Length: 228
Image (tube, rainbow, N blue to C red):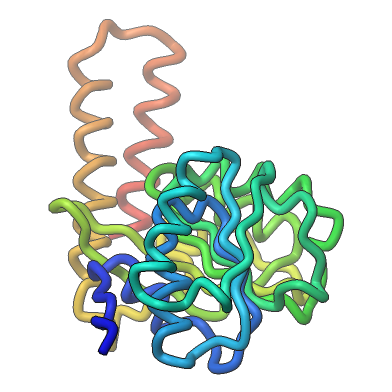
């Protein structure tokens, strides 16, 4: 019997959010763990493992062969979502990269504003930038959950194009759709956000006074008070 692939918490959270029977496109697939895990368990109908580099795709092929799902997985060497259409995938995962890069990948896809596509996005950096991009392009954050990896907290966003505007308040930008009532890590995520902002304020206080510094210090202080 082929052994069952197990996932680390960050990828497991992404897997939990993938709809049953989805046609998945995993962008920046690396070793292909996510699509292989889902195919093994019969959670998805099909999968594309996409990466800009040949080496990661070779790793993904070996993973698929090891766990016996190579027949259900299509390997695609491409830049972002180039070469993929909504007929190929109704669920797009872009994870493990910076929020700016994720936004750039989305901005370059001809089919991004398609309400039938579910996006599962997990930025390692600049989540505020990614949320701002989504709001500006009339996407709605349907759900957001926290995960812990290497001692840091990250969020996984489930987004969909709805054409509906979202007011870009500080809370919407920094906390998105996090559920502070039911997500056991959401409070720690907020503490992490506030801690980074407090360190920014401390650095500004210690910096040489200038009009620009004073303006930035005021903005940062007001933001901290709003987010608490």
